[in-house]
Length: 336
Length: 206
Image (cartoon, rainbow over all chains, first blue to last red; front, top):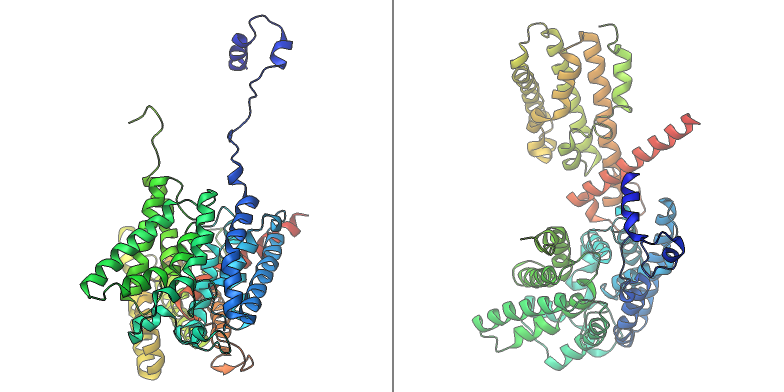
């Protein structure tokens, strides 16, 4: 009581309360700076816009497979979001579009030939176990879409392994072979750089075209929806490690190009790793996160049984994100 | 000792209200490791039950001879004796199952359920109470293991006790019989048990 009266005294030197009523300074709890770019719905609509070129290209390449997979995953994600949020007795969060984004990203990370239950299960696990169980959007430790994909990847190894990509038939000719990275890793076959860059290859629905991913990704970066440090860090460390491997094995640039433009690297760097919830907050932390993700991607690609490592690399770096945040916590002004 | 639980109370407590896995969160190592099928889970539960019963009876009989600072050593030695019996028995008569369970049978020695029951019940109460406590806890452990194993085996292989229960079209969720499936199933079932507990408490409060 005495404290409040003390602080109020100097504010009313003249003693009139009318002046205080018209004061220009409003006292309110933080946050004081309202950043329009940080609004969930705006972030999510930006991401959907940025995904449009990738969706368009995947529909052109994989036709009915892409449409089927996308609609299954989006519907399943929204359905499970509705169900699980209801179960927790929270107000509905379908309007922030985050479930739609998760659904699209899951669909784009799956092969077109995957049967319907793969998409549905991945969506239910992503939303239920990956997100809502932790308390909803903003509380989750791991990228929900990648949790869902990792679950089905391990559950249905034979449906999502390298061989499954070769089952898609009756599509653009170029898409009926093995994926570029597994062709390179297991058969030593390489592809033309142009085909890799523009996406005339086989792969998961959204990962084939580096051009489309770059287009959407740069849009996100310029809109400041995604931070530029994370993709920059990932690309930098992939270029470094793939470059060294390339020179050491005298692949005359082919290996570097394959690792840069083949596989899900661009898609992962711009759309998966940049998830604002599961990546570090500070610029320095984002660099560490990006470099670490790129390093793990290359380690998995070069030394493990899997041809691709974006998913596991992102999940592993998600796990250390709280630690990175603590390391890079900026000191308040005046201390240190 | 007027307020100490009766044999019947001990028995009932072990099954659900103080279920070793779902309530006390004890013995999670075998819970996670051997529940990828009903057969190994039930073998594990039986072995633990046997060791628990024998150890509780022996500890209860010698409870007045125990020196406080040496009691844990005595518990462990007693448990180790019966674990060795169980381990050799399985190796002799159920060789394949003994291979499947691998180190988890010898590891019963450090299973905290048994040490906990020796400490809490057997070293303080009579033989009848200790025995009924052991049976109750063993049933609770078996219930928990078989519930987790049932979920994992049905989803992971479409089978129960190795017999097909789901249609052939069922796509096996291989992840459920792998270690991640153990953690996911245990977490979800634990959540369900807590949820039911909350609902019950709310109903009785009304």
